[in-house]
Length: 221
Image 1 (cartoon, rainbow, N blue to C red):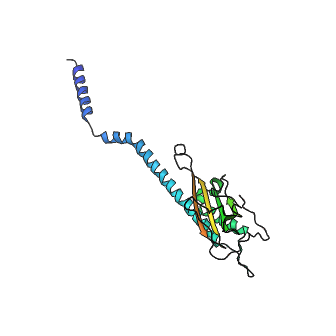
Image 2 (tube, rainbow, N blue to C red):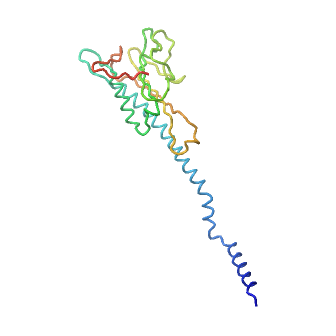
Image 3 (cartoon, rainbow, N blue to C red):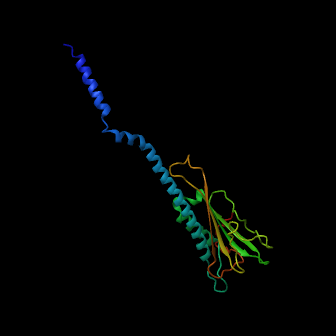
């Protein structure tokens, strides 16, 4: 008697059993979903990194404004002075604080002394910069408002800060090119810009930035 029909029957039975077997269904579904889950997880990491970077740049601007408002050289015969070396030191401190961002390569920090002129108008007395990124201040350049009252202050419209007579505000702008962790080609290139402002903490000689010998490099814009 031929064994072929018997073998066919056994094969058909096994195929029927395999068709009704659902013990590996979860593994198959997981295999299909794994790439999507990985993409979503990495996307969440990227978004979290973007949010953290916004916070870090904002804190960097605030720290720079705070340090610039405190720095000074005590003078026994007059008011404390602010020097070019002080400017360089606060920039260096900010760069060290944001070492992982590499602000020198990917960003620009702009420090402006907002004061009042002889007419009572707002005056961008001096301005210093740090970082390789090409970025100009959104609120004016050094010397703007030296006379007259055309300059109304610094900052976004409706939220401008204004210096009071004989006082100075250290106004900071930080622009940073965001560096993606994973999705460099999918996330649009963007520049994060944050601002901060602090009144100079005590009396300061506002006539100029001093640069006594040995002279320091001027971080001009």
